[in-house]
Image (cartoon, rainbow over all chains, first blue to last red; front, side, top):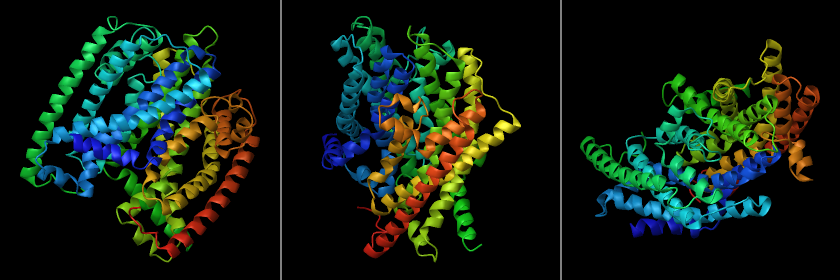
Length: 260
Length: 281
């Protein structure tokens, strides 16, 4: 776990230009959506766009550096090394997650700094609640990335197309830039229920409440319990799926096929 | 004719690459998902902001402004990036050496791939716009004043075509970079989409930006393309269709000329330096 986390950290911080590369879309999209809020006179909500930019950095990292990673590793011939090593695939994925989170922090910090410097969004935060919610949101989000990563093992190059299909709809449904749950949501109740199955939706809702409306840990406790539960379930699911798919792959001889 | 054949062959290859990895109708449908969701996100932000802020006023015409702009910036971003992808992926999968060994410049291959992506992206963007129009209408109960007639569709189609030189010029500039790069080119779509979101007047008028950025953004061919498309589909939009088209073609022509010159120079130098088939930096 530690070894895989270090590889990820070294790959990012050993080439500082990667930090600049990774922050491109989060910074610019957050800036554009902040300007949209600003241009229509809804300046009270610019903070939502900044927070969305922070979280889209992590969502992008989950999709492109977690979910697709095993697929790319297969193409590069690295996956065979994982399989022959004594480490479990789950431990490797957890290490990848930890490294990914730390490696994405600079991008998130830059989005926050740019948003703060340009727009001074109004914040009424319960910082303990924000920290706890943020941690649990990332835990459940990266656990979801681990599930996707195991599922993508069965696919070839289709994985990238699936990522592209997932990225924007999940950003929309989870309400990265606007409330997706509750009375302010534009979505009908049935769609809100579906959106609630995505950890990011619950996390964004709780983050907005703790960061902009001063909600305490107690007030967002149901969200926190849900996020913790999702993290545990998704982690177990990914472990099960990895073992199953590895077994099937070994049996059929497809587990290390590079390009399909 | 000699130039048309490699162009068409590359375009056909692009179609195969982009949509034939699964059943073509399914592939096209999947490709419409991202622009649809992106247009919905931005439109909902507008709806949410205007409905929950005392200083903001909801206007269906403004919602249409945002909806059209958000669909079209995604359209430009998706095909302007294709030259970079074609080169980067081609190097990675060892397809590109087969292209540069042919008697033609790789510029034909790049143009063909961009044109096929334009066709696919046009279909998916129009589908995304149409679906978002109906879904938004049902979610927020607003009548969005987009007018689709034979005349407005023709003007819209002309605007889409007028934007090709500019997008191709941008594609050549990015492609010239990826002839040399083998690592960071994968991040370019994010930058292209992000910059277009900010500077193309897609989500808000360019006058929102501080001077001189507002002036620079106004004269971008992509800004003028989106403005012309809005005038075509949204009656009462500010500006003149003909003026926007003229500026789009002029700016696009300059960008195309600059882009292709840079690409030819980069290609020549990449062959000379022996990096044209370099898979990894």
